[in-house]
Image 1 (tube, rainbow, N blue to C red):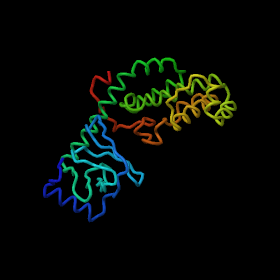
Image 2: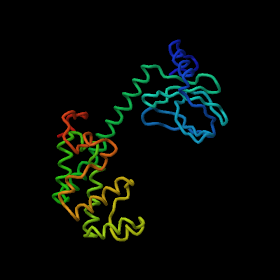
Image 3: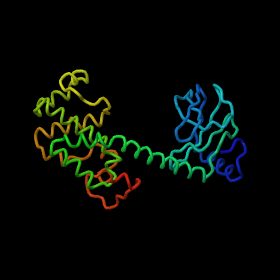
Image 4: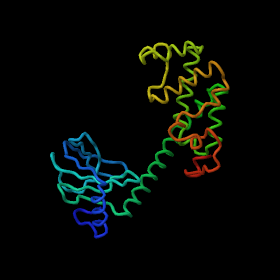
Length: 254
């Protein structure tokens, strides 16, 4: 990264972004220094415009009411440069951007593998306690997506486990329908042991799975995956996808 000493090529690219207005202008309201696990020491900035972003700590002092012009790559959404009070603060070269993309990708892979290894025993134990139709549901995703266990199983398992709890404690579709309309406080009173880490999407899926299971157990196997609306049916493993390739170290699949 450059500190007020951009190369000629970077100056040309920065000028091109100015001409095409691929930037945002902001005024610093507050800031703090943080340590990012991927990029190291950075400055987290909150602006008068209620926009927040992080930029590298280049050693240049920033203060309240400073003017920040932030440049972004329209393809990746990366913050690739910034001006401070009209002067270049930093600007990433094309190679630095590629390195950043690879660094983020590798970090995600490492974290996914680490989380999976940490949770594998719990996932296996939870799977073994599931009713047969829920096991078939998980089996379908595992078969259709070689990476399902690492990428999505923790999320899917939370939905399935709580679906079983909801079904066992409420029994019928009508009771589940009434329960679904209650407040979270009242829901917890009627169904004990629900996971506290649910999002709106995962809690809806757990409730929906319980309702379907109460009416048609095979429907649980057929229903789309919990994150399929976000990532797609082929990616998640709802349907076979011959394009899936192993993207993690070999030992993870053993």
